[in-house]
Image (tube, rainbow, N blue to C red; front, side, top):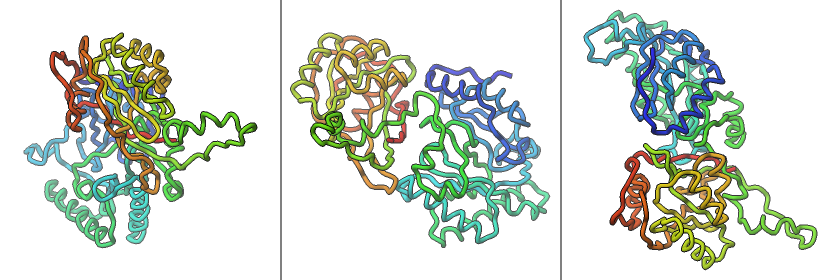
Length: 438
C-alpha cells in the first residue's frame, strides 16, 4: 500500500535518505518485540504518518521506508497488541489501546539545562551508572544523530503487570516511571522527564537518519560513550547534502597561516596544529518549496575589504542581485543576496568571485553559512556568531527568497521588500543544520 503523496520540500535531502534505505537493511534487533511496535514517520511536507501495517522484520521495514520516503523514522517506546491501529487514550475501542509493556527510556539532549553535547554525554554516562545501581539492565545507548543521546532499557516491571484493565495498566506504568524519574532527579540527573514517563512516546529508530543533520542515529557501546566526542563522531555515518563536515582549515584556523605554510623550509613557518573537534549551527541556501537557492559569497579575512566591495558591486550589477548583506567573523566575510537563482547560476557567480564555498556548493548542492557560535567538546566558545556589518543597496531583478527574507528580518536586519516578488515558504521552513567542524 502506497504512503501519502509527498510534495517537493526537502527533495534533495529525501533523495539521499531514500538512497540510503535502498542500500541498507536497518538492524531492528535492538527494538525487541518488533511486531508489537508502532512506527511513525515524519514526511517531507512536515506531517507525521502512522504506519498502518505491522512491521515484522527488516524486509517489511525497508519496503515501508521506500514506499513512504520519510525524512525521520520513530518507534513507540511501548509495545501494543495492535500497534498498527493504535488509538488515542480517549478512544473507546479497547483493542486499539492494549499496552503490553513499555521500555524505560532516557532522552538526554541539549536544552536549557544541558548546554553542550559534551554535557549531554556526561549526563548519559551518569544515567547508565544510576541504572546499574538499581539493577536495571540497559538494552542500548545511542547517539541521536543531532545533539544528544538515548539510553534505552527493557521494561523493568514487565513481569509485574497484573492489571487486566488496559487503561489502568497504562496509568500504573506511568506512575512507576515517575518514581524512577524522581529518584534520578534527587541524584542530580538531567534528561527529558516527559519522554521517560509517557507511555505514548516515540523515539528515533537506531540506524536511521536524522534529517536535521544527515547523521545516522548510531548505537554505541558503553566504552565508546565514555571515551570522548571526537571518537564518537568519527564512528557516526552521515549521508546526504545536509551533513557537511566543515574542515578545520576553513572553519577553525586562521587561513593566513595555511596560506604561507607551503614556505616552511624557506621561512620556517609551520601551520598550527589541528584544534579539537567543534560543532556549530548553519543555515542552508536552499529555498523551501522550490529548487532555487540564494547566493552566499564567502571570502577569507586576508582579502582586502576594498577588493570585496569591488567584487560585490560587479556581480550585483551583472546578475541583478539586489541588496547584498555583509556579515563577518574573525576569519571570514559572507555576502548574502536574497535573489532566487538556479544552482548552476549560483556556481557561476561563486566561481567568478573566487568564493571559498564553491566546492561546497558543488558537492552538497547548496552552501552552508554559520549563524551560531562554534563550540568545542568541552563547551568552550571557540568563535562567536558572525556579526552584521552593512548593506550594499541595489535593485533586485527577479524573485527573492521569502524564507531568508523573514529569517534575516527576525534577526533585526533591515531587509527591503519594496517591489520584490517572493518565492518559497516562511522562515519556519528554513533549513537549519547542526554540523561538525573537523
